[in-house]
Image 1: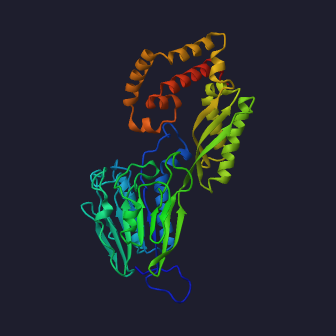
Image 2: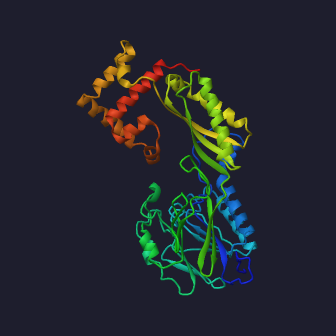
Length: 437
């Protein structure tokens, strides 16, 4: 392997080089929202992580990088079969043919204790051990890489404190999978502080675990590349890896290189001034078309649509959600089979009247809301209600409790009786007065 330089002049140092820093690839991660979905768009989403990794390896070869770093969560968990491992081996074989070594650190998802199947990796791949920090040297580049893989998923100690001192005269890279104190709501595995990393004296910290790209410090650089491919609506926008250029022993350029093949976006549509459901369907279509043009950057758009605003059509919208979803998916398909895909529609509209005025209606529906309002002040009723619903909520899987966007379930999980009764009342009113299209 020969060092590569980003300099175009004649005075080129032999230690000038570029490398790829990536993390959180989650190969073959099971994707939510695809149950029952068929067609080329759904298949593209299912294989997006592989396609993105394939594109990154191709980018590394084209850019003639000197080495390739994976800072944890290459895999999403234990392999269902050997195909996941065989795919990775084939990609590393491509790097080997181009003379590019790869350095792999395992994080919480692919910790040593979680992966039960193994395959022999090509000779160009080095894996950081899990018992203690390990150092790999690339003497022809004057580079040293230091890192420690996770032995098990729940690593609660500060691994960075045991990392070795920097080797004088070399460009020292620390490879670490950490939430750095719980950034972005991520579980705080291998907790440490930015001060811990800066105090180590390395020239570059290649971090993983946080799925949003972030440069936390420059000189020395402390970097999260973000995950390689967005997997759901909470991972919108460009996703990719970092191309790091080094000259004279320091980072001279850091470029985030998007390689995602599916781009997630959360799109909102206002129903406030709509008089017919067809107007809302038209706005859904316009929102998808605009996002394909302005946000997808030539990639397939995967989106969630949210209908907002106080509207006379509130009840009809709730009753017609399935129809509106079908209309939105038809609009996406009309752009081409692999141009756009609609995950779901979320209705966040409100009725034109507030809850007090609705409860004042002199009919059965007004009486229903009035009764619910009175019940909200009955302590015995509330105690029984929250006890039963709380037990139900506690039995739900953790990801449902923490990630739900349903207003009723949110209130139940939070034990907020006032919000629960108010939300249920409005939902009942909307369902009883709404007419599906």
